[in-house]
Length: 194
Image 1: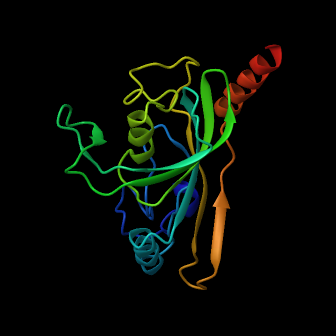
Image 2: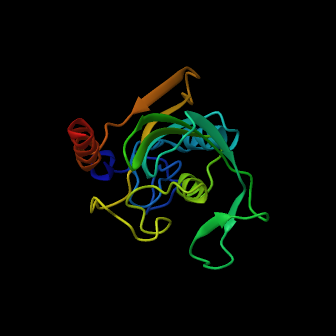
């Protein structure tokens, strides 16, 4: 993308991250917002700050979640035990994650998540905290990666925001990566055999 856009992106992100309004965790796939100019970049950044940007994710997590939907409202901050990790902590910042179960498997649950806040590693920390870590998450899943996926089974599926110029509500979606689809298909086939 950077090669295609050349110098036509916002300069706010600097040379390394030109136009990048927000980011995804390492090894998370999906859609992000990139601004073409500084005015749009500032407007979009304010929308994120004011929580008017709606981010929808999907994830495959370990274990079977009993609730059909729930809200996780736990503050997240830097871990006292490992400064490279985030954790649920009383000293942390407010963090809210809503999830809905899309499909239950024998040992896994496929869920859709909407985050109200955008804390570092928020979904990964929240899901691990309630005992359902994201499959393939090398940091919060105790190194367990039963499908040997490269990256975690967390995907930024959809993003909605107000266009910075027209103010019309717009949305963009990103297809699931092939490795994610392959794992879900494998789980579907195993369910058929039972």
